[in-house]
Image (cartoon, rainbow, N blue to C red; front, side, top):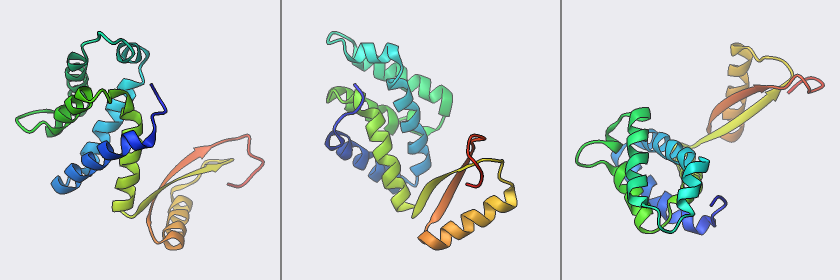
Amino acid sequence: MAGHDSTVARPYAQAAFELAQAAGELQDWSDFLQVAARMVLEPEVGRLLDTPAADLGRLATTMAELAREQLGGRLLAGERAEGVNFLRLLVENRRLAALPDIAARFEVLKAEAENSLDVTLTSATPVGDEQRGRIEQTLNQRFNRRIRLAVQVDPGLIGGA
C-alpha cells in the first residue's frame, strides 16, 4: 500500500495543486489531503484497499464524510465538492492507496509556490520566542524564502541546536 512510485502520485498531486491554486485554496487542499492520507494509513482502511471485492466508492464517501466532520469547508460540501470528486477519481483509477504520496507531493508544490521552506530545529533546551524569531529571520535571509520553523526539544543533545 504505502511507498507508491512517485510517478503515480505526481499527476494527481499536480491536478489537485492546479485546482487549489486557481481557487486560492492551497491551505484547504493541503488540510484535506493530509486528513485523507492519514485515513488511508489506518490499518482497517489498508485492509479494505487490499481486498478486491471492497466497495471503494462507499469507502471514498465515508472518508469524505469523516474529513468533512474534521475540516468542514466547501471542498467537501455543496455542488462543487472538489475533495469528494478527487476521492472518487482516485477510486475509479484504483489509486486511493497513493494518497499519502499524493499529499506529500502536493506539499512540495505548495511550498514551491509559496516560496517557503519547512525547517525543524532540534535543540537541547526550549527555544524562546525572541530567539526563534531571530533564527527564522536569519534563515529567511539565507535561503531567500519564507521559513516555517518547527522546534523540537531533545534533552539528549549535548548542547546547542
